Amino acid sequence: MNKEYSCGAVITQGQGNRLRVLLVRHNAGHWSFPKGHMEQGETREETALREILEETGLVTHLDNGFRAVTVYSPKPDTIKEVTFFSARPESGVMRAQPEEIAELGWYSPDEAASLLTYESDRTVLNKALEYLNSPRS
Image (cartoon, rainbow, N blue to C red; front, side, top):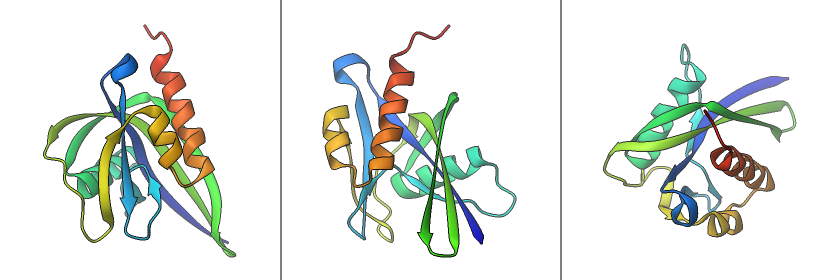
């Protein structure tokens, strides 16, 4: 059995009823969060930051207090583990990576939930929103 690893983030800006979530629509047509495959020698955090920058043009800060992992089988002989962090944009100019991303944008949590293609991503979104809305010291 082959194992693949990908990492990405639920990227948000704003607060309360102004909270927005960044989604990407891949050229293949599905909506998701920015993410991608780990490269040799990278940590999960490094992978997430690199993939976010490549796919969106944004430099982000990861909140290491949140981590959600999904596991699925994209092919009969493969198990894929995807680690998601929570992140906030720090700098950069938002632009889609044309080789992979058809469009990207900021959406309300409700809009994001309805756009996300996969149920597992909706579960990650709900966990991230719960984390972001919880009191932290």
